[in-house]
Image (cartoon, rainbow, N blue to C red; front, side, top):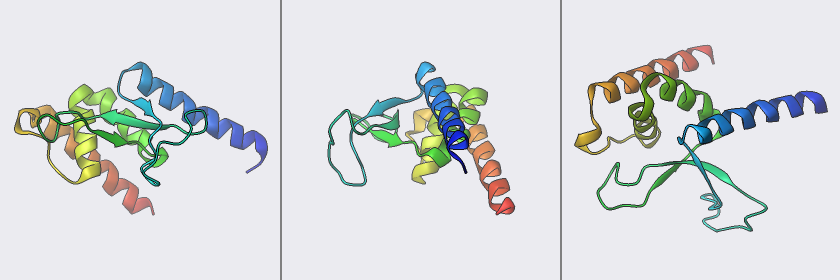
Length: 124
């Protein structure tokens, strides 16, 4: 991959992140889960989905979004809105949200994500 291709790929990645931020799906944190530190704000940021009070009551919580997960998150959000975002986070965590969030739209979104993951596995 030459420098121009690298720039194009980074531009596409940033467009996806800014789309999600503009839709209030993600925000950017400076906490680094890998090192469990708060690096200098100007040097590091990571996109996260706010899941406060989604998996347990009275919790401050967020789920990190990796580059490999961006396309699934965008697709499920576009089709299912907030229920899709919760389904995405539940899928990443391998757990279920509080009962109040387990709606028909939530389960439809979980099924969509399961199918996308299966299709992705088959292509490998």
